[in-house]
Length: 112
Image (cartoon, rainbow, N blue to C red):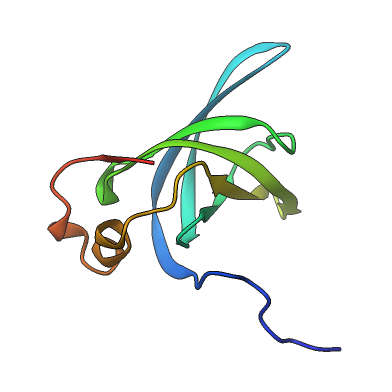
């Protein structure tokens, strides 16, 4: 079995708070989660609740200055939590990616 990485963009490890909001037929939902890593085009987050595939979410990670929208591309149960793969609607700028290594360098939220 091959273990070759097939992702288009490298993941940057990042552990920090992320807030998600979404709507479905039952109404509006909000969930705090923990970001596990970030790439140029997405995030992997750990949440206490699942979010259905293809759901559009709004997100914010204030500590690193990310705010915007994304789509759910992957959902997997991991113990009592869920790992959610999000594809951002906009590519993260180089400034944001560099800021992940030095969060103090980001002064204000950047929309994605």
